[in-house]
Image 1 (cartoon, one colour):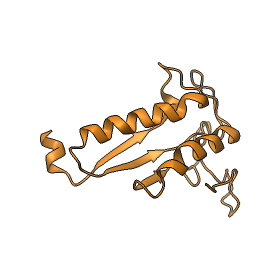
Image 2 (cartoon, one colour):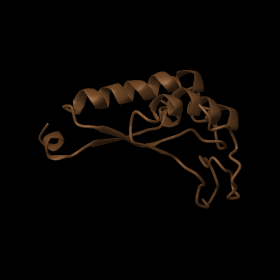
Image 3 (cartoon, helix red, strand yellow):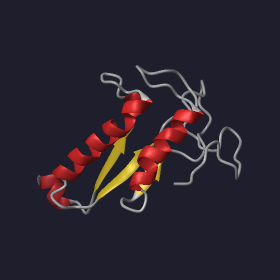
Image 4 (spheres, helix red, strand yellow):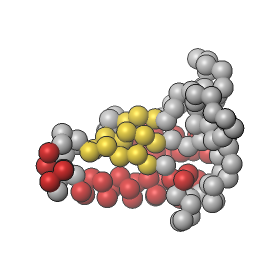
Amino acid sequence: SAVTAAVDFLGMDAYPYYQNTIDNSIGNANATFFSALDQTVAASSGKPVWITETGWPVSGPTDGSAAASIQNAQSYWHAVGCSVLGKYNTWWYTLQDAPQPNGNPSFGIVGATLSTQPLYSLTC
């Protein structure tokens, strides 16, 4: 509570894809994300909560029950992104990934080549 009193806002990173000790399938991602958000808001003592990172990978390995795919990234965008944008300061991870040794997982919404065409619809 002393830290919360000293800050202007609380930042929250939430990646249900990596929550592999519970059901982290795309079907449960919305509930997992909003559970974390609700807990953060409850601990915020009324301070603003910022979603400083979230997203779902478009490619990469399966982690627990979570499959990385464009379709699942699209589902996560609609279930989570469309629900929080305009209500919370939100940073979506990421427009384009930096090169990685194995390239996995990739969260980039425009794929490996920077483009004006996203891999999935960003409309809400």
